[in-house]
Length: 455
Image (tube, rainbow, N blue to C red):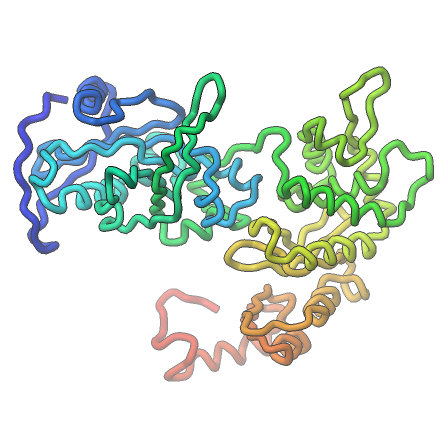
């Protein structure tokens, strides 16, 4: 890349009068020039590349007008994580889907070109998801940045639709001490890179083009905090143990590991056993796990065979009741992304959960098995679960076609809620009636027929 020519003055105007703006990724041949501009003109200098790191140059009428650097997000930000409604596990797994604007430099003098900052920043953000995916193989969903409130008002961020959501805690990364207090908090700005970014980042399933950015959480990352862990353990200790009295691993500890694994998204016995292996010594000690003979600090965790023995003999109704009551008692205090769905752990334990659409927060949980037409099949258990919740005031309940039943609809409406049920071929008469109703002129479903939309 050639040395930067003198920037032209760009006048403010209407959208139709705005100058042609292009955004490019800086290749290897332009890195030296790019970093030199930052070192000479930016008060933070160029900085060191860390992790996935992208340099953009914004051109106006073919001439460089702004430089931007994007890199990894902060590991933990209370205001950001509260805004997202993340659990600790989700934050660790999905942190790469947030990118941080580390440098933003206008190449014109301050005040010389009104609106240039917001225009170039907005253009760079629009191009960022595609640029990032081409460079690193996954699409980011959220951007973060910081401004010094004592020096900058952040007007360009606000004008380009960034949202101020709080501030940093005032700590800086330090090689020796990890973090040191700089007594200088920064204003935190967030910008969604996808219209549904906030929902995607805390939902159970990510878009396919984002999934390669997910990383496995390191050891010791749990879906609940320590007080919640201790209270869950205290509750599950009350479950009756179907095994012999001389077992090495107490039932309360095993069931707590099962519950934590389920809340963290593990869905089979092998995954539960691997999850248990990730606990730190302190976490293992809190659960009363046994010390390995001849050691002072190595606490053993249950193996696959222990989990199998417990789950095949367990009074699953008692376990589900204890877990359900614990969730209900802590409604609104748990991380909002503890999402459970109707999954079976092999053929031994099925959990049916009613959870918030927005954040996956569980509201109620029950146990079922795979046999149809029994008092514990999914259909019967779902009906009892809906009936067991005191009220559905102003809430809309959605289900898959299995639970499209008159009794469920009546229960929801009588308790003050609304419902939206799917209909498929398992109820051909109802499906045909709905299709005929939808074909009538002035259907309330759609104001006009939609091409290519089937039943």
